[in-house]
Every structure is written in structure tokens, then in C-alpha cells.
Image (cartoon, rainbow, N blue to C red):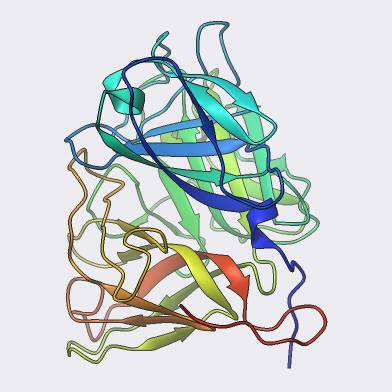
Amino acid sequence: MAYTTIDNPELYFQTKLYTGTGSTLSVTLDGEEDMQPDLIWIKVRNQDSSPMLQDSVRGSDGTSYRAVKPSADSAQTTNAGFLTAIGSNGFTVGTNGKFNASNDTYVAWCWKESTTAGLDIIDYDGSGSNTTISHNLSAVPKTIWVKEYSHSTNWAIYHQGAGNTNFLKFNSTAGDEDTDNWQDTTPTSSVFSIGSGGQTNNSGRDYIAYCFAEKQGFSKFGTYVGTGADDGPFVFTGFRPAMVIYKRRGGTEGWMMQDSKRPGFNPIGGNIFPNSTGAESTDARFDFLSNGFKARSGNQNSDETTPYIYMAWAAAPFVNSNGVPSTAF
């Protein structure tokens, strides 16, 4: 049996729920050990409002961390009411309603940039010509999220399950599209390739890339096919999921995000849609189990022919590095 490479996933990924106060708020993560996040995705749960994504590489302009919206093609923006600081075990938000309106509820998904956990964040300049971009993972990225942040341009999402000729967009419900964004070339353990497509390589434009490699017992990026029935497929990940992002490759259907803290028990509800500003829905989509997840009826299980792609991060490994099994909820 394969053991995990990371015994404590909370050192590299955490979901944080908090309630807004309308005043500057310091948010502390819940893990037993400190984790300084480098990538923070925040969404107000009970209101229609854009999800906001910040990182330590683009950093702050002195007023707030530069934010891009997964639900939009817009350029990055800052505001004194946005995320204003990242600390050794959390972050601070101002008073903007996307981050901290009084009595609104929020979810923040927080990743630490680390080769150990398979995340590298890369800022690069577009050239308009075929080229490669170096990364430091020493492993092949299985998914890459790219956003031109200096101008309005669609997101470009590479996923191994969609192949190197296609891309998806966080800000769209469309299925995967054929493109020259990746030069029809699979990433390697040291570089990923970009063509002349505007989503990844407009000349003179600024881009941010979030590169994720799989780490046994911590992260998994794959595909599954639905059954169209209440009893959907089981997907083995090798860990109890903390969070899953998924989308059907073909046809018009939204992205969905679910995590183990909303509601904190099976079946997992609390859908949030990266392509939408909409509030959290309560539909039960998955069971999170000790070694993977199981789809229930609904959009995540309706198509029996077109694969769904997924991205998953761990709450606990199925078997730790000493061979001790974990447990489900």
C-alpha cells in the first residue's frame, strides 16, 4: 500500500470560515500548527459577489494585495478594503463587502507555495511567440491556472484530463476548447509550454501561473465519468478530501467547489461556483470518504459519456507515512 508523502496536510492547505465584522479583521487559520498562506481564494457565502484570488508573488501595492476574479476576465485590482496583509498563520482583511461586510459569512481556501506540496506560483511576461516557462516543482504539473492580470483576458486552465490541446476557463461554463495556449505540448518536470494564444502569451502582457503537481496522499488531479443515477461513481484519491473543484469537460455546465467544512459532514453541500458571483447553494453533491469521494445525483454525475475533471486536496491521508490508516468523518 502506498503511503502519503505529507502526514499533516494543514501545513499546506486549509479552508477557513469566518464572519465579517465590517471593521478591519485579522483571520487566524484553524490548524494545530502555523501555516503562512501564499495563495488565498475568498468568497462571500451568503451574497452575490465576485470570488477574489490573491497571492504572495503579485503581492501588495502598499494598500492591498492585488486581486483577480476567477469569475471574470478582468485585470487585477486593489482596494483598501481588500486583503491587506498575510501573516504567519492567516491574513487581514479590510471592510470591502467581498471580504468583510458585517455579519456576512465567508470561506477562504488557503494554499502554501511549496515544492513539498506541489505548488509553484510564477509571474511571467508574455512574448507572443512559442516559448517555455520554467517552474520549480521537480515534478510534472497536472493542472496550471493562468491569468493575464495586466489586461482583461479569459482565464486559461490546463488540466491533464483535458489534454495539451485544450483549455478551460474559470470564468466560463463552456466545455474545453481547442487552443494553441499550450503548444500542444505536455508540461515537464521543469517547464510548461505556451503558444501564441492570448490567454497565456500576449506580447508585453503580465501573467500569473499557479502550477500544481500531484503529491501522493495530499493532492490528486484526475477524471471520472458519471452514472446518471443517485448512486454515482467512487473516485479514489488516497486521502479524505478537504476540497474538490470539478467541471464537466463537454457542454455548458458550471465549475463547482466543495469543501469538508461546509457543512462539515456528509453529504457535502455548500456549492460555490468559480464562474459565478452567486451565493453558496445547499445542494448535496458528494460524500467525502477516507480514501476519496463519491458523487451523488446532480450535475456532477449526470453525464455518462463525457468525463469530468477534478482537482482535490487532502484533509487527512488514507494511510500516513508510518502505515497507520486515517478515518472518514
